[in-house]
Image (cartoon, rainbow, N blue to C red; front, side, top):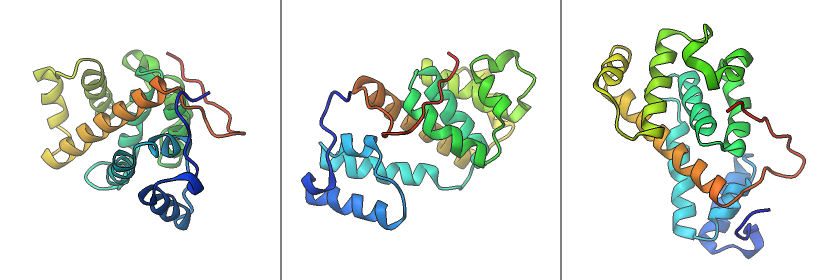
Length: 183
């Protein structure tokens, strides 16, 4: 059970009501995450806006973005985040084998060189914040500055979201089956 109240549309601050309505108008479900951040309207509103910007398919291949997001959820043990992005990942080309082997990607044969560069960078940003020169140099082989900034923002954003989900014990929506990642 969530540690904070999940704000419903009828109870919400006008800014959150408007945000919920925009999501509904786009056929985007009002996730428990959005309801939780509805407790803090300015942050909730801007968190959703930033998430929208991060998910736009620009500068980085969506498959690589989703591998990074799944890895962040895996590293931070955020079953909610991991579950939400399994379907998205599969839709953009992440394979079931890659999802199954994400915890052991360093020894898996299922990842390409560019995917390994993204995963190594994701691990270091998520766990250490500081990135080694060799990891960064390897990433630079594949990406320009725009893509690196986008990837870094994506990792940081989903690190923040995963931390919120875990700390506040936000559960999946009713009826949704969790995809439990291997840790």
